[in-house]
Length: 208
Image (spheres, rainbow, N blue to C red):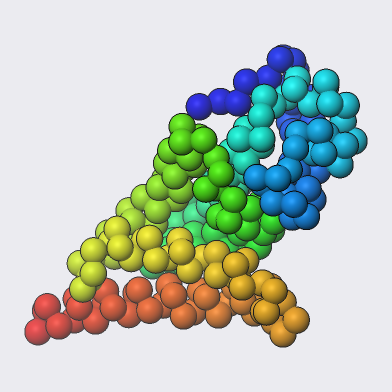
């Protein structure tokens, strides 16, 4: 599904929507999604109220664009880093690290997507959940290539995606003590390596 715009210039749409998202982040952080108005978002973004509707039609459009940007940025980073990596062990680590980095880079968008999604209309929520499912499926495919483990790859993949936003959802208590790199390294080592250990341990026992 594509958010419709009244203007046709794609570069203009991209620039203005980025501006709108930045303004919306500030308003949503202060007031929450439910209480925020498009007028307030337009004011924070430095765009006229009439002009904002040239690029989005509603608040739901804006929240959907948060998650779309998150998903797109993740897959672009993964494609640039892991598309040519044949070894699934290495590919899983690179992919998970890319997921963590994107979550940290877009932390405000991620936080709003997870905490405010309950306010989105059902049709949009289905699309947002589908985009998250595409990320889960990407991890599931790689985990499946590692061999049969004690748990279903779908379950393992879901937990990786859930754990991947740990640094964002707990940022208020982690940031004063740990750098972004320390949190990412911890999660890669504790989560990915644990998945690999379980699968490799199962494979060793099965061959005995």
